[in-house]
Image (cartoon, rainbow over all chains, first blue to last red; front, side, top):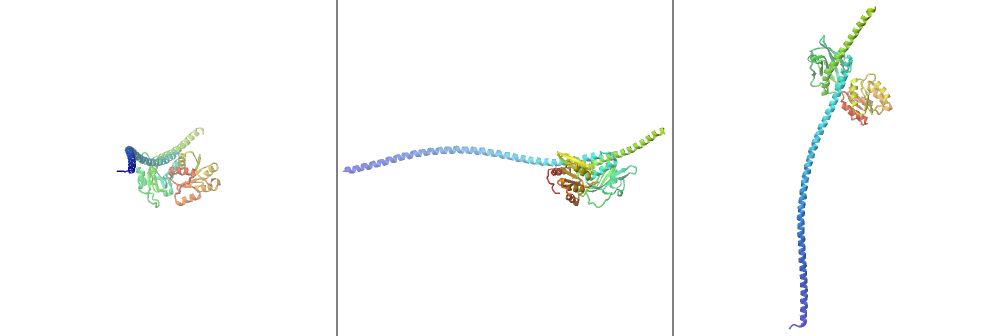
Length: 278
Length: 128
């Protein structure tokens, strides 16, 4: 037989147990709810991560496309830059060519202008000399003119040389004579070191021609110390001299001859006019 | 406007130099045929640049430069020599007497224009 006191103790313990059990139940319920909440959260995050990954992939794809476009643009610009650089080089070299051409044209213009600026024979010879000294850069040269009667090339002007030392040259004889005969220019292939004058070995001999008629020869024997050789403009000047100097010399000679003849005729006419009144 | 005096006994060279310089905008060219003619023109006008030959009748370019340099008004006048004399001692003599630059004939007109433009703008010519 259980005593009532013991029954009370047992009842109290049973209630305590029940209370602990109920708390355990509540705690378990709470855990279950929390677990459910967390699982929901995990699901949400997983969804967000998937969405984010999709967005990143798209952005990455866009960036790669943009990068490819930029690389293409850069390559295109580099190629254009190279093209422009090449064009620049071409323009620079063309500019130099134009400048040189301008220089040459100025020389040719001034030379031909001066040659035809006078009808005085001596003046024309002086202009030819000036051109050869200043524009070509020759130090020693002789201008021979053809004498039709003797078939000789007689010195008419000289620079850097004593005229008395220069002898006439027979047409057809030696380099100068052959140039006078054939009308073909002579150029030495290379400019030798100057070792004194040899009148038959000019550096160049240029025929002065009116059509096919050779009226003289310009023979250059020495260039100025600062001039190492002939340049393209020199050949242009020589070619211009061959024609223009010949015309200027020929016409000035004719003019001076006609002026002399005119003066003689006037003298005769004056004489004739005076006779009836005597 | 820049005034340039070109002193040359050769009409061909005078015309070539003037022709080249007249292409520079704002440049006026006066010509003289020798040193004495040049001195007269210098005393009667204002010049910003003098270009002179060396070998000339009446008065040569070296004498002209030495007289110009003695004048306090023209001590700073830029001077270019253009000559056929290409030896080193001639160049030294020309620069020593007071020239700022020394060019030998035959000249490249483009080089002369560049040099003249530099001197007119107060830029010292490069050696050589």
